[in-house]
Length: 361
Ligand code: SF4
Image 1: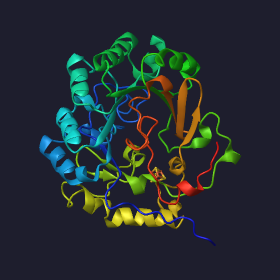
Image 2: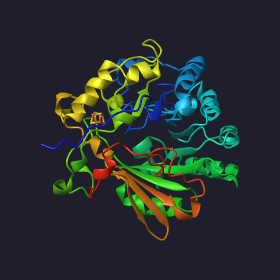
Image 3: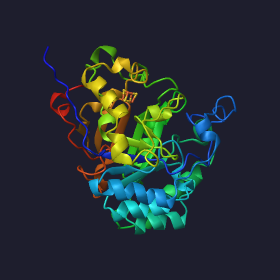
């Protein structure tokens, strides 16, 4: 049988996801980490029971090693990054090494000082989770009713940015049964304010299962291919542990491929035995030998990003899980080469997979 997959990882990851702290200042009912239900002593994983903060020195150590490789950086994993003690230092380190950066935030701490800091440092992109149009819906999604405050904070960032190019500002919406009716209104409202609007399918506590996503037809799901997460992204938790991918960082069972502070640094862990084992299994189509990957549908993101244009939007979709509506009038800070797969822009070749990408879900 013709072997079509043999994907290799670069010696250093193309994407760095860095969790500066494992804490959050909210407790959203739909959060897989810090919801009130998840915080019950019997449910809350050990990892979250004690606050961890990456120190400035550790941030420096990370960027000194990976900065020269110019990864695309996301400054959060399962947390609110604006409460991290090293947040501002990390932004400065990232820019010092001329990397592109992004993060998601719940938006509560986007005050004048923070917005000015982000604009002054030409931070590349900021995504604010909103998830609702109405107060009652926000209450269901985020446990608060302060929609006006969130709108004010997003507008503040856009206003302080003024004629400056960065940051690119986006809002995000996780689609749930209780908010899906608000999608058209959400898009209509925000297209006049921000640069990009992102919709994401909810990933349940179990594993990403694309068959439950709206619009996905089982018969049209393409053939499974290796998952680019383990060839491209490194996910560093606030204690220095590296999880194999963004999905396993959210799994109730804790898993680590090594610790960047204790096991010789990023390159050592990234090219270590555990990552090689996972990658070999994927290249041999033996993903089912890995309990985390068996039944996980997130591999579909390995296919090429789909792109479509309308009068108003450049719509990009890396998979049925995510759709970015880039407002066409606001593409001045759009860069296809940078911020890989972030903000609906950015694309970097991914080995052989691109050349066979043709799925259409
Ligand atoms: S298939 Fe799922 S669990 Fe496996 S590496 Fe990809 S995202 Fe992670």
